[in-house]
Structures are given as structure tokens and as C-alpha cells.
Image 1: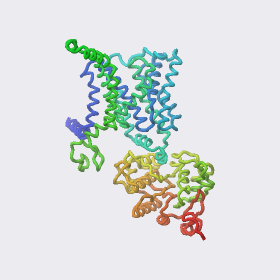
Image 2: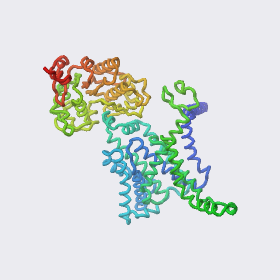
Image 3: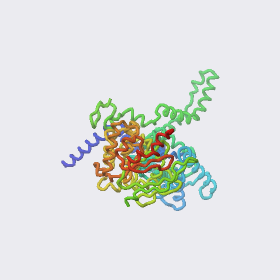
Image 4: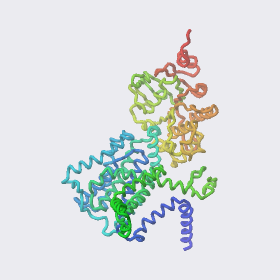
Length: 374
Length: 255
């Protein structure tokens, strides 16, 4: 009993000295708690759906960041991995009756294959050329899907898949826990020695080669890792929506991912995840514009012309949803060029000039080396 | 074997109409420091880049330890035991200085030869200490001055534990005092041994340099290039008296 209390105290001490000292770590902890406790706070299937879709796109955005943010291989066709993952797991599930627990990883493996197939010819390309080439691959695949409607369902896609779980809560937890685990894994990868090499490849590839590192191998590794995670998110999407359609391969999807990643802060992993959890709920929140009505009492006391104008204005209001969304993103990028989350992080934390450890900006001295912070 | 450590034979390289390297042949022994000098545009950097495999030669062969290395990928050549620095420094500017060196420590050669060394960061730190910039290890590489970038290049090359080191203007941008320091550390490196966790093979070296005075002090042999051709090859004193060399550097006198 005594030893139990001893270890418990030690654990609390570690928790206080490692987690509670930095706002960013507290934020990550709160995010985890929020995701896990969400069904208790808001027991509403509509809210579940928002968070589940956000989780799926968080995996996708983080996987784009792993490839393009870290390695600098601008991939504007990330929807390819998403679509291949979705279609493969959908077809395996529908035709061979493979349950989601196996079909999603198999879909991810197919996405890895797609990543290698694209990665090998694209290795020699850089910058805009790579971006344009990768952009074309999902479009080609959409064309192929329309060309074989008997097999792929054409424009309607593959529908009638089995559910992830039978209940809303089950769906919610399967997707969100997968998201938390995969994002942590991705963050860990970028935090390791592999992450350093990927980052170095982005800076100067020739210099990495003259350091004796096989850059081709690492770039392909980045392509396949990113494809794997994006494929899982595609499989989750297909099984959650119970349909895998050509919309998963749209150019729109590719660019949304890029927008999420740049909005949240490139080459950070946590940035894109945070961005998705800001932007998707925002987009859903803006749906309230559809329900805006002007009460008749107000209209009756208004001049005729102004009243007509107001009615017209309210009518077009729902269509401004995407406009407001885009305006919000542009403003954020104008004032926070590094992205939202790194900006916030720099506001609340300062780096010690001596030992480079991050501290809460309230502190006067560094928590490790006691050097003056300001 | 000692004669065939690095063997360059009939090497040719042209950029369009310009012949950068013309029929160059020379050998480097295992225990030598060779200075490579010549006027600007003589092809010194091109020669080093071809040995490193960044540029492909048009014809001719390069043998390292009896193996043909031209046509191989750069990383394979590095892992055979050659390392090089760049004349215009190419650090990873957004990474901390220590991470710059850790990339080199992560190459298969350094990992395999790590013996009991498993801590890559500690080893990178020792390479920085050898180059003399360990106090700034956590700073971003973009904050370094020209001279310190040179040292970072050297640290990065040394971290792969090479047997043949190609230094492209290691004294460029250094003050006289710093030049002496760098010359000393190059000599120390050539003797071999351990620098903390870092192991030095006592590499043979090819040094491209314009500061001839300092270069003469550390090299055993000098090769002079002019317009892609080797015009002299011998001990420093001989080369310094060679008429062709003086002509190529100072131009022809009237009489």
C-alpha cells in the first residue's frame, strides 16, 4: 500500500513537471480528454457526425503534412490515396465480405501501392512539376472509374457497405480513437531521426545525399507512409458513409487537405489536426445562415424597398457560407503566415535563448537552466 | 594497394562547349594530404564533384580502394568512405546545427561503424566539438556566420567517418587566426584516433584552396589544374618553382 502511494505520488509529480508546465502540452491533453468525453457532454448524433468527419480529415491532413510539409514533395493529388483507400476497402467489403477491421488496412496497403506507383516516377520531379503531375493522378483515376461503371459503380460509387459499428457511439469511438492513435504515431515518426532526415531532404536534397543518406529511399518511405495513413482515413470514410464515390477523388478534396495543413501550420502534424477541428465545425456552424429569418413584425414596419432588399439578402445568405469560410482562412493566413497553431504556440510559449527549451511566456527564467527569458 | 587508394584515370567532363576537365589522371595514397590548386574556373570543384558522384563524368574512370565508383549514386560513394564539403555552404538552414550533423551520423556507414556508440546525438555533438561550434549546437543553422558554416560543413563531413575527405576551400571566409585553427584540426584529423565518440580513420585528403601559404604547410603533395588539365603534380617546393604554374597564376611575362 505504501509503495502504491509512493508511485502514485511520483506519477503525479512527473505529470505536474512534464505536462502542466507547458500550455501546448496541456492543450494536447485537453484535446484528448475532449475527444474522449465528447459523447457525454453532447449526446447528439449530429455532433458525433461532425467530430467523426473532422477526425477522418484530420488523419488525411496530417498525412499530407507528413509527406509534403516535411519532405517538401508538394503533393496536390492527395485525394488519390484517400480515394484508393476508400474504393479498395469498399470493394473488398462488398464483393468479398471482408469485415471493416480487415478491409480498411487492406485499403491502406492498396494506397501504399498507389503511393509507390506515383512516387517512383515522380522522384525526379521537383516543385511545380511535381505538384502538377500529382494533381493529374486522381483525375486519371476518376476517368478510369467512369470508364468501368459495371465494376466501380460509375458516378454513384460503391454503396451498401457494412457499418463500422452498430451504434453511433461505437462509430464515434472507433474513428476518434483511431485518429488519436494514428496522429500520435505520425507525430512520433516526425519527431524521430527519420523526421530529421525528411526535414533535411526538404531543405537541400544534394546535401543530404553527400551526407551518405539514400534520399530516394526516404522519399519513397515518406510517400508510402503518407499513403498508408491517408488510405486508412479513406477506408474509415467509406465505411462511415457506407459509400465510396468519385467525390473522394475530387480535386476539391486534394485542395481542402492542403488548405487545412497550411491553415494549421505546415511541418508540425499537430497543426493540420487542429486546423481540421477548427474549420470543419466552423463550416457546420455557418449552416445557421440557412435558418436566418426576418420576423414579420420587423418587415411590416420597414419601408417597402428596404424590406424587399432584406428578404433577398437573407435568401442568398446560405450561399455565402463558403465565402465566409474562405475569408476567414485568408485573414488567418495574412496575419499568421506560419499557420494558426504555431502562432498561438509562440504567443503562449517562449524559447529559452540558452538551452532552447520551451517555457510558458509568463516565466521570467528558464525552467531548466534558469537563464533569463526576456 | 596503397598506390591505388584513389585512382583517377583519363577523366573528361564538358559543360556544353566548355571542357571543364580534360584527360585528368592522378593517384592519391592512403596516407597523403593532397592540395588541389589552380586559377578560378580551372575545374577543381568539378573534379571533386565528380569524385562525389554529384556530377557524371563523360569518360574515364575513378577507382576507390580498387572499386570503380563513377556512375554510382552519391550515397553509395559516401558509404564507401568518401566525404566532401561544399564550396558554397549548403546547411539545412531551418534545422538546428546539431540536426545538420545528425543527418550525416544517420548514414549507414556511420551507423554501422558506430561500434558501441548508439547515441547519435552525442556523436553529432562530438563532431561539432571537433569543428569548434559545439556551444551553438541548438541554434538554427541560419544564424551561423560564414566561418562557422565552413566548420559546420567540416563537422558534417567528418561525422560520416570517411577514409578520403574532399575539402572544398576549407579556409574560405575564415580570419587568419581561424585559418590556423582549422589547419590544426585538419592535421589532427589526419593523424586519426578518437575524438570523444567520434572515430577518425586518419583520412587521406584532397584540399582545394586559394590560400596557398597555409595550404603549403599542411599538404604533402600539390596538384595544379589549369583549364581542366593537370599541369603539375609534386611536392610543394617543386610546384612552387614550376614555371608553368607561375604562368597560369600570374600570366605570362612579356619577355
